[in-house]
Image (cartoon, rainbow over all chains, first blue to last red; front, side, top):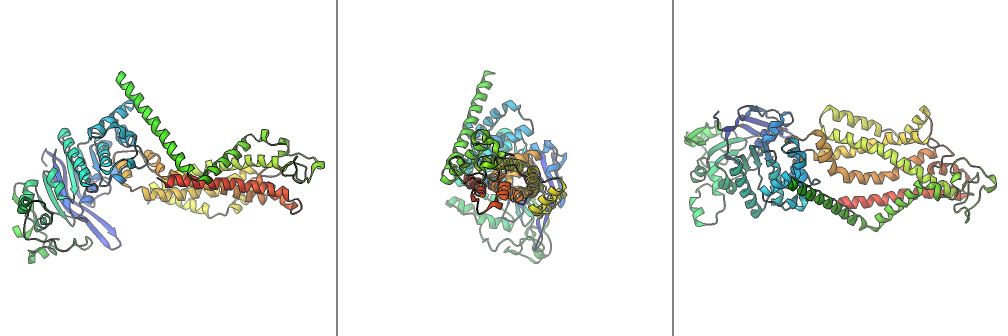
Length: 320
Length: 299
C-alpha cells in the first residue's frame, strides 16, 4: 500500500440472507482511495455501491475481505466498537437529508452533537462554532434555530454536510448525496462540496448513479455491476475511452443537449434489459446476459483485471 | 472577550424566541378545536377544586368520618345541592374531595407507569434482537395478561385493600402498554438514517435514546397519557366499587358510588353525584387527549 492511500479495500464481500436466497450485494470488491481525491463509485440500483459504502461505515460487518484505513485501522469491526477517533475521522452524507436529519431537533443541536462528542470546541463556544460551520457551507446563522422541515432540500443537505464537517474528518462518504435534490440545489451542493474539499484537503468516496456529477467532481471512476467492479479509470479516460461494454452502454444512455456532447458519446451499444437478480447472478462475467459481444468464455469464467495503461483497469474478456 | 459575550447573549435570545414561537404554534393548533379547549378548562377547574377542596367544599368536615343522622337522606336543596347521604354528609363536598383522590390516582399511577414503560420500551426497541429485548417484551406480556381486578384482588388480600394498593395494582397492569407503544415506535425509528448518523458520529446510547428517539415518540406517548388518564379513573373506580380499593369513609368517587348504590333507586342523588363526577373527569381528559393528538398530528 502506498503512502498516499487513505483507504484500501480488498476482496470485500457482503451477503444478505433473504427469503429468496442469499443476495451477493458486494462480491469481491477491491480498490484504493488516495488522499485528497474524489473517487466515484458508480452503478445502477442494486449494484451494491451503497452497501459498499455502508460496510466501510460499519453499519454492517463484511462477510469477507479487508478494509484498511490510513494503514493502521481495520474497518471490518462494526461501527459501535470502533474507537472514537475513527468515528470522528470518517463521516457520511446520506442520500435523503429529509431522513438523515432528526425532524425533532433544531439545526444547531444536529450540528453541535459531533462538536460535543469529540470535544472539538469548548461547550461555551459551541454555538459560535455551529454558526461558523453554517456560514462555511453557505447558510446564514439564522438557520441554527430552525427545524429541518423548515428548510429546502438543498439547504437540508448543506446542514448534513456541515454536520459531517464539524468533527474535522479527513474522509467523507457521499452516499448519493445529490440525487434526491432538484437540479439547482444539486449545483449548489456540488459547488460547496468541491470548495470544501479543496480548502480542507478532504477525501471523498462519491457513491452515485449520476454520471453528470461524476464528470464534474471526481478524479477517478469505478463502475460497479452486480456486486463487482468492472472498470476503473481516471475520469477523463473514462469518458473519452470507455473500455467495458457496460460502461459504453451507460455512457451512450446519457441524454445529450449539444452536438458536441453527441459527438463524443460512444456509439453502438443500446441499453438492453435490466440488471439481473443478485440472488442468482449470471455465471462468468455478470454482464454477459446484456452484453452484445458475449463470447463463450464470458459465460464460463470471471474476467481477470486487465491493465490498459497505468491507471485504467478493465475486467472484460474482450481485452484479454 | 466582549465579542464572545455579545454573541452568547444573541444566541440565547434567539433560543428563547424559538421556544416562545414553538409554544405559540402548539397553542394555535390546540385551540383550533373548541372541544379540546373545553376539556382543558374542565380539567383546570376540577384540579383547582381538588387542590383547594378545604376552601371550596361547603362542608369540608363531611369528607371523612362525620355523622349527623338528623340530616341524613336529604334530597338536593339549596343547602345541600347534591343532597346528603345516609350519615347526613353533604354529597357535593365529598365529591370535591373525591376529585382530589382521582387526581392523586392519575398522577401517581401515570408517574410510575409512563417513565417505566417508556424507558423499558426504548431500551427493548433499541436493543432489538438481543437478550435484553426478549426479557423486557416477555415480562410485559406476562403483566399484560393479568386481569386488573384479579391482580387487585390478590394484592388486596396479600397487603390490605386501600387506595395506595389499588394504585399499585393499576400501575402493575398498566406499564406494559407503554412498553409496547414505545417499543414498536423505537423499532421502526431505530434504523432511520438520522439515528445511524448520530451513532456513526459517536453519540452515546443515552443520547440516542432520549435525545434522538424520544422526541420523535413524545407526541404519541402524550396523547396516550391523556386518553389513559380517564381509564385509570375508571379502573380505579371499578376496583373501589368491588371493595378492593379505597375503603369508606375515604371520599373516593368509586367507593362512594359503590357505597351509595345500595340506596338506589329511592335515594338516587347519592350515587348520581359521584357517578357524574367520574363521567366529568373522564370526559375532560378524553377531550384534552383529542386536542393533544391534533397538535401532534399536524407536524
